[in-house]
Image (cartoon, rainbow, N blue to C red; front, top):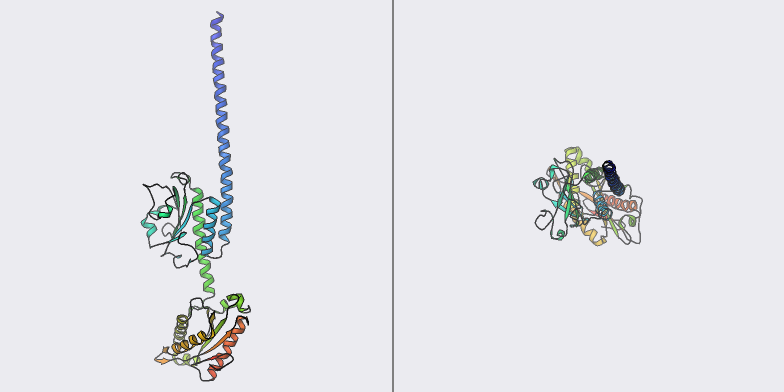
Length: 369
């Protein structure tokens, strides 16, 4: 009788024991899950802290090239990436921007619609695993060590202007199917930052550009005007300055109209720019007067340049009539280190001497030409 009563009690104890063990296992799993969630939260916190630091550097960048450098350095160092590379479309707004300082390893130019032909304009983030059997057409031999990659499409998907590639030797780093929220955010930040940087640079360039001739205007000169030449062009650099003026320009305007005068100024600026080096600042000082600065140019070479310039400018035609220009040439040795304004003033005075002597010629400041 007592033995029969003991069986239910034993069964209850066994059930209670299993339940305790089950609760203990559930509790262990819950603690493990909470620990994993906390680890992910801490990792995400560190990730977004690094992202915030990178975004701060990007927003502080002065131009698109500087911004690309900040991204290349920041992504490699802060996120332990084995490859960071930009692919930009030549036909986009950024295609006309010179980025000679960024190496070919870090920046590759794409032909028109190549992003669309690759089918990348369907979404902003692509995750892919790489292998000997499965690669990516834009990668090169030097990228053979990569095992996974993320492609961040930059700009509006209807008109993307570039792709940012992030590569890793870890095949699980950018495994398809993983969450891409962070990368989506990064694509938007990079795309908008580059668009804004190019817009800011374009506006800044317009502010210091003469709309008629495409040369610099006086606003371009203002920050440098009162500085020593060495502050602008560096220590130990001789600098020459040409000051060019159209003879009887008012008479030309009165006879043929302002459209003819504008045409002459455009042709004059184009002629001067064609003789000067790309790095020589050409400034429209106002009206029909232009200043050309020639850093690192010896005086004898500058005299050859101005002689050639006078010859070509005096051949410019308007209404079947040749124009005439006068020029002044001033020289400042590195030892003199004159102020920019002073050197331009010397060339201006020499130009007036050339004009007083009949025009169509040049004079050297301080002596006959």
